[in-house]
Image 1 (tube, rainbow, N blue to C red):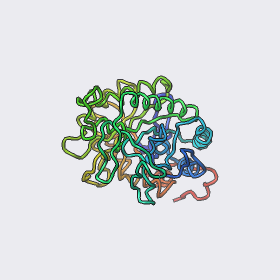
Image 2 (cartoon, rainbow, N blue to C red):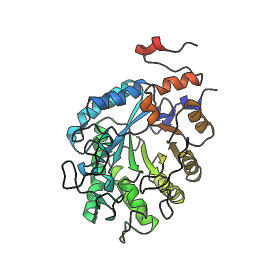
Image 3 (cartoon, one colour):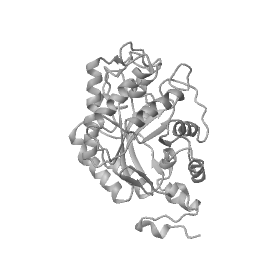
Image 4 (cartoon, rainbow, N blue to C red):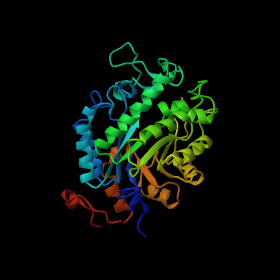
Length: 357
C-alpha cells in the first residue's frame, strides 16, 4: 500500500499532491511588509523540494499587526506583485500556495530574534502602540497594550477582509486565519488575556465572537470553492485558560462557518511550562478531528517520515505541517518518499541526484 503521506488530499477545488505542508515560519526579512527574493527562494525551494502545500509566514493585515517591523504584510495593494511572483513559482512546481493572515495584537512591535526579540517600546524607532482585547501586557517586561474599542474591532475585521481580497489577487489558493500562539484572535479567546465585560468578553460565545465575525467578513471576498483554514492553540497549558474542551466547541462552530481544516497547535498566550516531546500536539489534533468531526492538521516536533506516516495511518490528523525540519532540509519530502519506499516525481533538474537503491 502506498504511504498515506504521499496520497493526494482534496479540499474543495484544490488538490494537494501529498499531505506534507510547510508550516508558516516567520523570516523577519521584509521591509514595510514587502516580500523580496529571500521569500521567493525560501518558499519556492520548498515547492521544488516536493511539499504539497506551502503556507507563508504570519502575514500581517495591518502595519500594527506585525509581530516585528520585519514581518511580511498584505495591508496594501503594492504588496501584491511580489507575492504573485512567489505564488506563480510555487504553483509552477506542483505545490499549492497558501498564506496565513495574522494580527499579533499585544505581541506586536518586536525586534527580530537575532537582535534579542524583545518588544520595542512604542516611543522608540520601529516600535508602536500595540492593541488587545484588554490592557494586559504579555510578560513583565512588555508594554501594556491599548484596549480595543468597538471602532478598533471593526477596523481589524475590515483589515482581514481587505487582506483576503489581496491574497486572492496575489494568487493564493488557501488562506489561514492565525488564531493561535497568543496573537490577537487567541487573546480574545482566552480568559487569561480577555477580561472585557462587553459582548466580546466573558462567556465562551462572547470570546469567540470576534473570530467568528471576522470569518463572516472574510467569506464575503474569499471564494467558496477555495479552502479556509484556522490555526488554533488547543490549550494555554495554564489552569483557567483556553483549553481543549473550548477548542472542540469552537471547531464545531468553525465547521458550520465553512472552515475546512483546524491547523492545531498549542500555547503562546501566556508564559507556561509546555511538556515538549516528539509529536506532543498530535493528541489535540486527534481529539478535535474526532469530536468536532472536522479535518485537522498537526504540527510540533514532527521530524521524520515514519513518524509523519504513523500519524496519518492512525487517523490522528489529515495533514502534517512541518516547520523546523523543513528549514533544515527543504527537500525533506523527496527524502521521506525514499525512506518510505515510494517513488515520487523529482524536478528534472535534480534527477541525476535521485537515490537508486
